[in-house]
Length: 111
Image: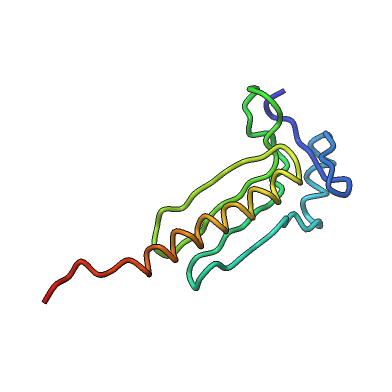
């Protein structure tokens, strides 16, 4: 089913009916991790509770997004809590590497 709803039992997604899902989402903390990489750049990983696999493979229930004042926002989805945590860490590391490389590159402006 492509529109299946899920809630978390600990860190484990459990399929539920629409009413149970809606009530759970009103009160539960869905944040897996949130990291401010630099001012204006935040990596956020959350449990979205709706299968975004669209019927292709395992349910995709967690999402990492990069929010940036500078554009270039990214999005990655995962099936499990552990995958989401690992993806969050990898996304933060990737951004930190890109930002470090960008700030250490010599300026191409010549006077």
